[in-house]
Image (tube, rainbow, N blue to C red; front, side, top):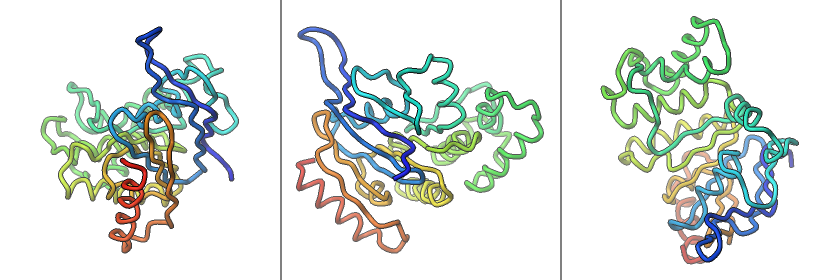
Length: 252
């Protein structure tokens, strides 16, 4: 399998001595190019820590993480930041937007930081992404003038500005109502079908059921995984039942 991310025996600890806590305990995980992987587990199980470790956002205590053939832990911070900026996209539960910029300017920030000089070109790309995600016409709005679902769509647009090979999403639907959450997940499925790998952390079985594979974490380890066929859009109930059954089996 052609992996985009390969993590081996990942250990992550916080604190020292008697106060030391092990958040990841020898975790090994592979994500193939174009794969959609969801991570589920109770609070404190290590699921978000795993996302931060695999994306290079957090320094690991032991083991290794490779992006393609590049060992992330061996990179200087500037080189690591460059990979995150140009090869990875990030979507979080609460999009971090600059209040002094409108929606369009917030979206084009990653391209500006990448060094693109043609502002007309990057604006055109941002507007195309906004149209694709259903927020066309909101370019000039302040971030306080849009709904939570619209703001999350803008966050997805920003994450896609540099055409990342993988999108990391940490509870992207956690702050949304059911309708907005379903719409956001529909967007992520389309993005994945177009070739972008996704690693998504969630507590929602319905969200996880759209993935190709679900990893279940507990006490800093992956205790089970559930492969699923590619999401068809018509098999939601059966997929959700499988996720819920596996959650019950592993005590999550």
